[in-house]
Image 1 (cartoon, rainbow over the protein chains, first blue to last red):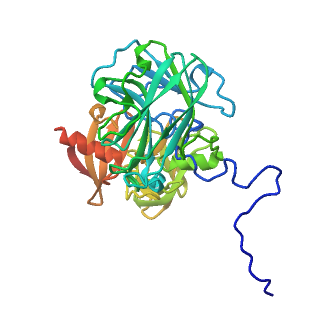
Image 2 (cartoon, rainbow over the protein chains, first blue to last red):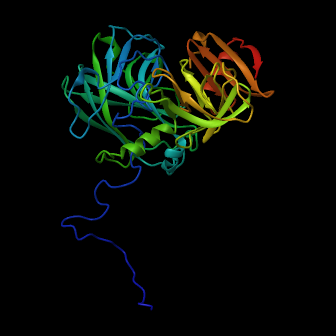
Image 3 (tube, rainbow over the protein chains, first blue to last red):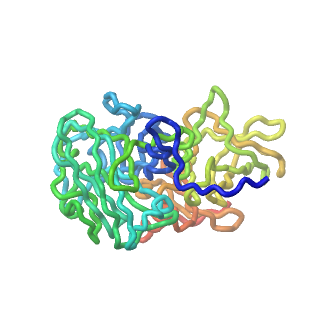
Length: 370
Length: 60
């Protein structure tokens, strides 16, 4: 039965004083993944000395001229995080190092092109964004960071830490770049760099876009310049708009899946159980082949690391054969083929098999980071 | 990935078809797809461009 037409310009809520959507509710407002520093698949909270290019907490990697100038750990120093957070990324300087002219030390997140495609950067319609974060350091002064498209466009920015060893929330608003080339698919979209020390070659004028590969503002505090200095970071948000809004918390499973698009890890749990890796068949007498399915479609066909020697397979009437030289092939964002190469047990080609991790130190790591 | 610390770097094939780069580093075996957008493969190409040579290819 027709009731006629209803034209609606505004939908409001009967909640006193509120309008639906008038708060901070929106989906993927924050383009940073793991900005709350909750997920640490690689190190599970352990302290590490990162090498350049190595990831520590999920989605965050270090770009370093030299190794051994700093250590990093989720919740290093065990300080109380800012209200609303339970974790932070902690960095501790290991020496009083004077950064060389061509050197830089930074913690970086690269946002995939698909996740910034709507910003319109590189066009006349480039949108303004705001970066906000909580930071604490044993040092005070003018710190810095930078936005970068991977090498040819950059925007150094500064922020001030006023009180040592005290959480402070900072925000930086940046007019979108109307020039340059900005990735909009599976490659680099935007990189956000937090500077820990930078020489003059890669330092630039703060507050302006430049056609140059800069990663820090000129004159920023050098964390690696003071032995024992700390730098703690959490609540990082990159959002469209000219002011910072409340941090977008995400359901844990959702954020874990966001991270697994770039990296995931299957670790052995023995002796509680052998860890099931995948099902397959014996391609030949001792070559067990199986499907390694990714938990989510990955950014691109991943590299696969087999760490340790605790890999085995089950086949009919025989519990385990050792997998001698695990390897992978037929890679795709969704799944890959893994095979044993050689083994110590033999069976019959065509037998069904399961792959297992058979100790608690071995693991499989699957990587398609940017 | 740091190729300079690797024990072994070689291209490998499965059933006669090239499928990837194998990097053995201590107790780790990393298999890298021949995919241009994979950053580990990009690192391998850079390592080769710097004058390094992988071991002869291996076929499974």
